[in-house]
Length: 490
Image (cartoon, rainbow, N blue to C red; front, top):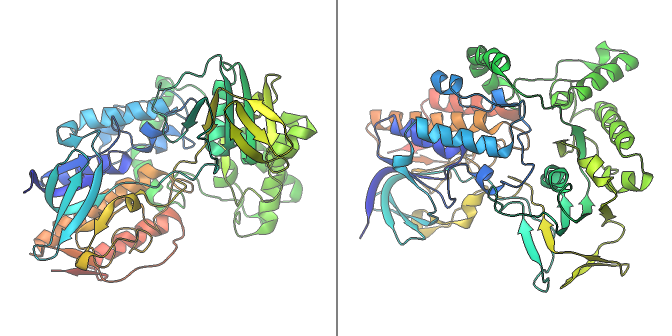
């Protein structure tokens, strides 16, 4: 017995889920989206900790399928805070009237294919059973794992940056330890250091940081980027990262002093331009990596001053091209505060977590009220793997084996968005990627119906890697334009 019949069931109500719900509904289909979160927002809802920010400039982080939607929203700063991104996604859901087809606080627990009928039975943690023709999984990636610590004996509170809805936790006046810190910790630390009674940064994997320049946007700035809507809509899907920048300076065309001056100017811009708009060859030419890394390292060393902090917080075993690189809002300065301790766990690892706090291998004890485990957004495996998905003959889904990150053999009418080789948020702007994936899915369903077919199934897997967003989206578009030769349509 089923409780509801649909044409398409969307799992997720983040950037990809909202785009898919809107574009598929525009095809006249019965569509409903399900999400375990308390509101729309996807990863932004879960990672609502203080300091959460976009590392993409706001004008590039919007949907381009509706110019009116783009123009009617205005970012308040160059790099919007996480809470503002959540407000934008709520604006999208309300403006497009998506909430009438949203089921929030509802987790999808299984999706099983009925071979005979070519339809899916999806079940939720509320006991609902849904019969649907298509399942579109906009589930993203799991967060990168935090430090593997046994915290059961800790008498205080254990928090994770990946499970921190906005306004959920108050750390004022408390002794807090942050383990990581990774890019999530880089964002969190400066925003809580001013309020905690004492902060201990337990650093196990330093990351490269560049000081963020985040000017406020007024009407003039908003009008300026809104006027570029057509240009951005055309350009973003063609670039390597889905952003408006591309490396355009050939090292051979510049003298060493000119290259250094260029890189310093880009660093002072306080943006991602240092590695997105600078020298060509970053990631493929070790000499370019060394030059860019030297600029970032020198700036970090100058900001820290203290050699002990430099050893703990500046990476020494990899360059900028390996990453990750984070834009920061005073992370290094916060670590130099007198009420902040920095522990280099590579030299003195955590031996145990006791009721009173953290005990290091040296025997040193850091008394804590709160222990925060910093987890990288979108740095883990595809989240779809946490759902019981069964295809033909009851086979389990391997989310890592897919065709263009969109479909897997043996799973007809199951469409995914976060499987390899689809670009991830570490290297790409997710609004660009997810919007165009959703548009591809809507077109594929429309073309399938026009051909008088009922199911769409990948007949193999595609390339393991792609050369950025532009290459990935071009491959997807070519597949559709050629009539879906890598799929079986019946």
